[in-house]
Picture (cartoon, one colour):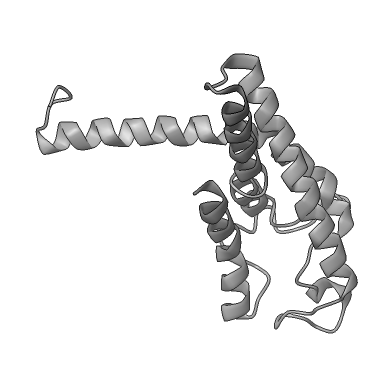
Length: 164
């Protein structure tokens, strides 16, 4: 479920770019300019998207594998180390795919004929992606917290008690 949801979340900005024919997404294009060669102009988008895919989804997949291997749910340090390993491994695989795709020089509809129109990421962004992957190990906890708060608010607003 995390893999599928992560790919969909990752693909939404991509679909927007192809439909609108522009690289810039108004709300998510913060700060709007590259910081050095390593932090892209769509930093806010990358933070939000990479929390779910590839890092978050890889972390959840690795945690599930470790849980199945051990026969019980891992807790504490083991849980976060398994998530970290999965997040970094899936980010490495996704970065390899991005690197290969970038070498093909497939230009999007927003292209002006330069390298900036490539639909795949440039290699200088990969260290930032790995940093985001390291922090994405907390995404499942944040999602579960938000889900529990929404469920509690729904029960309160609908007049249902938590006992039923």
